[in-house]
Image (cartoon, rainbow, N blue to C red; front, side, top):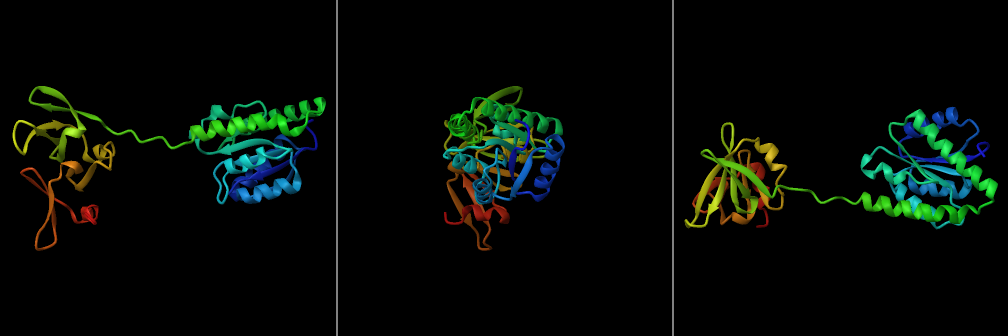
Length: 271
């Protein structure tokens, strides 16, 4: 059944809705675009009103996102086929490769759109030939897809450095970041100051060749603060913070007094 099918398009970008509608007219002329929605709430209303055979559903939309719409549709007795659209590769394209469902990655490819439409046509034809009830056939697949995408789209914990390679003389050392007191950018390198357990308030100096702006992005911001354009400190190593008569702050780590720039003073508010 490739003829006289009905569709709803849901996307929060008017230009993309228009582009998809025109592209569908080219690859599937018999498809009627019954409605176009700008968010998930409007999409559900349009689906309830028009009972489409297929929904082209953007994942990220305001008010109610595409996954929320899909979850609501999975509870219906009559579930339309869903073709997800997304500009975000992190939704794991392989998760969309289901028998009755498909995906489109933005910007849309006419060839890929035609493939998705062919898949929907084939499923509609199978359903018509077998007189399968529309609901249960899609429920299991849709529920499985939603669960899979939700797992894959969970934010992954950021990965930060646990060790750094630093040199001292002709030797190279692997130093745990937990043992580092602070980093200080010099001319073309960064000095790494590691606590020396054998000397009270002592520190050993090592060198790494890197840019401080690159290093700061690799360190856990809960543990390391950039207090100056040339200095990153291990927060747990701070003994105290000193304020002079002008209001300027300095961090004291052992015998070392490290200035805090005015832009970084907000880090110490409430401490």
